[in-house]
Length: 305
Image (cartoon, rainbow, N blue to C red):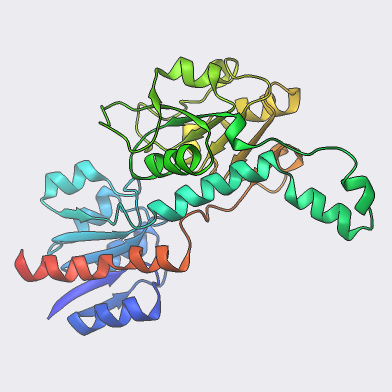
C-alpha cells in the first residue's frame, strides 16, 4: 500500500478517500523539521498552500514521487527542486475560479456602495441621515481594469462587462483570444491611468512581485480603487498605505497582503478607505471541496507512475 504524508488537515470526506487508497501519516505540525522527519519512506505528500515544501523536505523524501497541493497556486513549493529530483507536483488550478471572481466583484461593490457603514447608521437610529445624500456609483458608469486574464480575471471581466455593463480594459502577457463580452486589451500604463477600478489576477512571480509600487500608484486616478485577491506581495504594502493615507487613492480592498497576516497595529487597519479580509476569497464550501480533490489526483498518479 502507498504511504502518504498529510501535512495539514483536510475535510473528513477527503481524508477518508485518501485513507481508502493509502496509509496516511499525519504531520503534527506543517514545519520543515516535522515534514523532513516523517517523509523519508512516503510515496506522496499532500499539503495545503500554507505549507512550505522546501528543497530540504523534497530531498528528505527518499521514495517521494508526487506532491499534491490542495490549492490553486504553487508558490509554496520549490518547483526547481521538485523538477531536479523528478518529483511531480499537482494542484487544482480551476478549483476556486468562480469563488475568487465573485469575491473580487463583491469587494468592488463594497467599495462603491458602503453597505456596512449604511447598515451601521440605520442600526444606530440614523435612518433619515443615511438617506440624505446619494451613496456610491454604479459599475456601468465605470471602467474596470483587469491585470491578468486567466481563469479568474476573465470571469471578473464577464461579470463586470456582460453582467453590469462596465467598460473593461485588460492586460495579459499572452493573447487571450476572442472573448464573449466587450473588452479591450491595453498596456499596463493605460490600465493604471484610465481605470476607475484596478483588479489584480496574476500569479506571484519574479516579474509580478512588487508590481504595484509607488511609481505605479502615482499613475492611478485619485478617485480610483484597487482590488487584490491574487497574492499579497504583488502590491507594495507601504506604498499603498501611504497613498491611502494621503488621499491619492480613493480606496482599496485586499483579501491578501504582504506580510500575511498583517501585524495588529499595521496602519492599514486604521484606514477607513481600505477593506481587509483574511485571505478567504477561495474558501467557499464548493471551492474547498474542489481543492481537496487533489487527493484523488495523487492516488491516481501513484497508481500509474
